Length: 255
Image 1 (tube, rainbow, N blue to C red):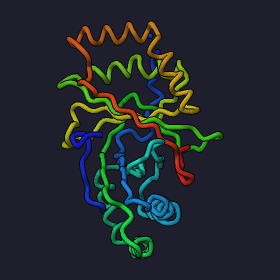
Image 2: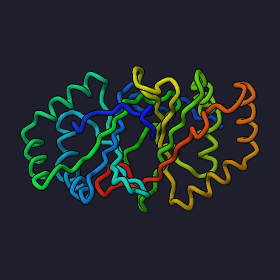
Image 3: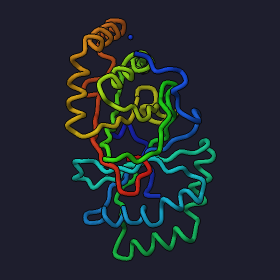
Image 4: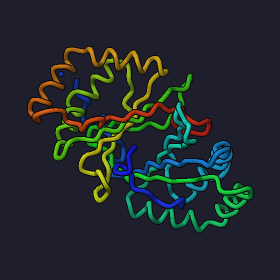
């Protein structure tokens, strides 16, 4: 992900039916990425498992999925939370940071040094075509794919229409599970050009097979070519599609 796509914070023919929309559409979502110091990722996961997730819940936050990238040289933990609205988000974080239980857990976990080198955050809104994100753990556990598209100027609505009318349905046709789709809340860098979303796959091999079939589908070819003709070229910028394959943590409500 580029600096443009993140708000940095301190370490503080197939159509989805209208009924399949995110429950509580209009809620505030937050996607957070922590980069752990060398040798500290296990301790960071332990703190979330034993303390942080429960304290989030205590303070009115809804825990979403917690993941680690399959290729994780930067020792990242990726997770998302939801709130009733932006004001609720701010109030929950203020209460969480002031909670003596959090202060004790943080101090105990950091007796040999801080765990987190960097925190990145995106404030998100669900799209009108996003399915309800069901917090469930499946057996066997799935792999998740975090995909982010950066469009050319003024073409985000074109991309959203293509997903709304065709792409999401074609993903389902080819064995992928649409988990949740977001745009960035206004006021953040890239808010007018960014779509970010999660897919689930049975395995990394299944993901590769699904995308191979998707890209070879004549319906996808027709839709892509029509959308690009109308827009005068590709909807995304050069190198504007990013993908991160992730596995859920053992404490993730979504797996």
